[in-house]
Structures are given as structure tokens and as C-alpha cells.
Amino acid sequence: MKTRLLAAAGAVLLLAGCGSVHPGAAAVVDGTEVSMSRADDVAAVYCQLSLLSAPEGTPVPNADVRRQAVSDLVVAIVADGMAAEAGIEPNPSSYELSPTQRDELARSFSGAELDRVVEAINDSQRTFAIAEELGAREIDDPDAETQQLQEAGLQLIQSEVEQRDVEFDPRYGIDDDLKPVAVSGSLSVPVEAPGPTDPKGLPATQQCAA
Image 1: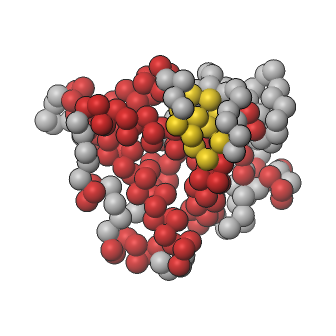
Image 2 (image 1 turned 120 degrees about the horizontal axis):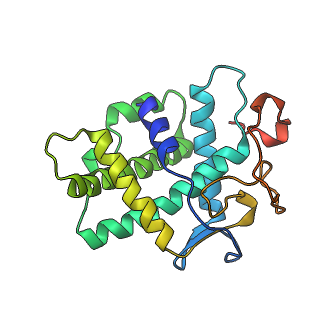
């Protein structure tokens, strides 16, 4: 289950656009806001799950999980819109965690924290469920595998996002080429994209912590 979640979180693409956004918004999609507090909550969950799955002592860049969180939330908005237009409503059983999976997570999380983790996982898997159904309509092959359908659906969602008016708060450092352009997440964005960063060399303030 943990592997499936992290694969889902990692596969959703970093998507387009940066510019001025509404005060308090991490991103805006055609006038629909992703609040900074919501993005921070999801980033905190991604941080915790990344730390659980990484070898002990391995740092996780905070900027990376923040970018992934806000990108996934933008993708979810677009995917939900596409699903509504196509008359798609995935069965909750196809993306919601089972009681057994929730119990497994409860070994590491509890109370409100557990609820936030479950919500983030369900939201991520709902996007993939929508992508799978969109992909099935695109491919129209009864023998196509789930991953193939999801990849086809995600490509459709990505294309749709590129047609939408999407803006990210510049602090996330995401440009219109779908790539990170800033390492630290500061308001100043360098002209050239940063090279790969060794997480072990990051100061503690730039590493996410559970």
C-alpha cells in the first residue's frame, strides 16, 4: 500500500504556470484557489510518508515535497473537472483505503494526523482512478493494463492543464516548462534551472521533518 501511494504521488507531473496569485493561495486554476494551508497540509503528509519509506537518516528536501503537493492539488482540480464533463464518477472502492490499510497506517499515525494522511492518499488515488477511466476511453482496449490506462489518462490531464489558466505562487519555483526553477523555494527565481541537489547537503531548515 505504501509503495502504491508513493508511486501515485511521484507520478503526477509538475504542471504549468507561475505568476501573481490570489493572496493566501498556493495556486489558482481558472479562478479556483488551492489555499496555502491546504498545500502545506498535503506537503506535511508527503514529508511524513517520504521519511517513512526512505532509509533511516536520509533527508528529504522540503522544496520537493511542497512542489509535489501543490502540483498534485492542481492536477486533482483539473481531473475532477474532466471527470464531471465526461460523466465519470469513480467508485470510491477503487481509490479509498480499506479498513485494513487504514489500520496499517494507524501504526504510524493517530487522531487528526491519521485523518490527514488518509485524506491525502485517497485524493491522490482518486486522481489516478479518474486517469484510468479517461485512459480506458482513449485506448479502448479491454486487454490494456491498469498502468497503461493511467499513463494515457495522465497525459490527457496534463494536456488539459496546459490549456487552463494555472498560476503558482512563485515561492514554489515551478515554471511553464513543467520544471523546478528554484531550489530553496524563495521568491527570487534564477534565470537558469538548478542542477541536481544532494539532499544530504541541505541545511536542516530546507529538509522536511515529521
